[in-house]
Length: 587
Ligand SMILES: Nc1ncnc2c1ncn2[C@@H]1O[C@H](COP(=O)(O)OP(=O)(O)OP(=O)(O)O)[C@@H](O)[C@H]1O
Ligand SMILES: [Mg+2]
Image (tube, rainbow, N blue to C red; front, side):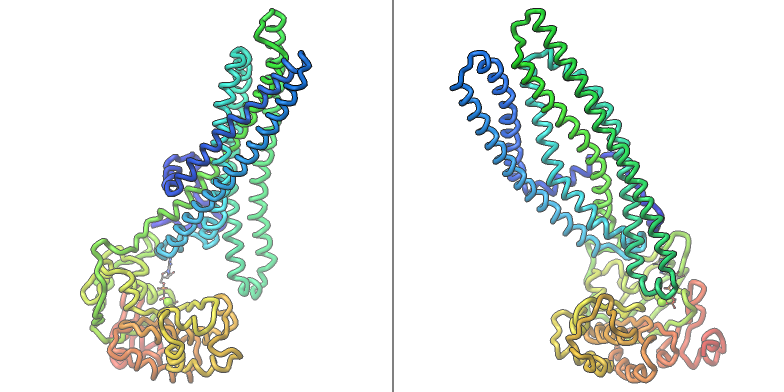
């Protein structure tokens, strides 16, 4: 059972680079391996071509300036122009190809994560704020896209460049190459140490940013309650606090990041000094292999060598950052779908409607049981009403019938089949739920009614609305059934929203029905009218009805009073009234 996280708690972060994550990424790249190989080839060509220029420079200094050979100068300048043009063309080509590859890979990861989110059980969504789930699909995947399209490309280019430059330097002068290495090694050690620190700070920054998004999303969703409780300024203070934590974290990174330049400059200067010192002493001691041209070419190579090296250090740090993003993305993609079809799951067909809770124990959070040794046996076609105090577990009982959550002990069975042995699709097709907090989507009223049965005709949707007497209010709207609703059905009254959700389930007409406070916001007159429609809807079906308004459940075959993690009283309205117990006290 996942530990629950809030907006003021940093999510746990893994800092180390886990190569397994990159293995997973490779599996995403595999379908594009041809493009990848082509890009690698182009990069190799461009790295080699880029290194010819210092040699030409050397030729200008050693030959042209000495012999004043203008023809040769012209040829060299022409060659340099050609090289530059070829490099630009190749760079453009491999960058476009890599961009295409990066975005194609990310598109698949985005689809996978979205698909996964739709599969994940409610428990996953209970485990963290919505904002922290959203950032995984948006920000973190964006970072990955950026990494793929830019950094992977750069990393490969730089590694290739360093290999080729080393070869060229060695062929020019092993002694000078040694000087370069002696300077570069301590520089790299320092830069890498710095990057390690920065990488850790970045992971913390990401957790802080995620907290901020979580709070932001909660604020947007709770906007009305915030305003009505005059919480705006208090919330503003909280936002400033979570935001300040992000800024502080960013500043920590910024300060350390700025150290990078001076470290590189210092060592580069030392290296150049060493290079010239060594070259001078070689020339003075009469070493014929050393010339002014070689020194200039070498100095150009040293820049070409240390530049990519420091960039690699930056990329390594980015790698650490991306790894922790990857971890979060894969944490979602690989999150166990505890509630899924077994390999031998069967379809629920020809539903009779027998429902059994056999000694069920259930808790949302470990150690806090909501139901304990819960036993309930419902015959096909019965209507079972659930009443009881707020928070007693009525919604929980019905959540288990549709397997929104799995029980910890015992089992829930429909027609003798444990719900865990049924395919989720057939189970949820056959058991229709009208939830306590109905949700409407942005879109027209008719599309919202059609939601559970996409193939239904307009006429069928309207008929469903008529059945539960929702037609009058819908037709009075300027655009009638085509009225476009805002997100979550804003623009309608709570009762109107319930009516539309009710029409949805009437249209779906499933063989088993669960109504959780379906008419709590509807006026008593409309409710009476619905009552008649309900009798038709529920005829011959097993139904669970949760209601606080007792008029709606008087005719139920059995009424259960849920309290103290189980059924405190059970019987028909008349029986329970005669008993003069808990149910009686409600009337
Ligand atoms: N997703 C959840 N995570 C953790 N605890 C939960 C969750 N949903 C419900 N609970 C807890 O389980 C208990 C039963 O909740 P449930 O929603 O079943 O109550 P209810 O009887 O339907 O109440 P109401 O009449 O207010 O709808 C409550 O104490 C609640 O705090
Ligand atoms: Mg409830």
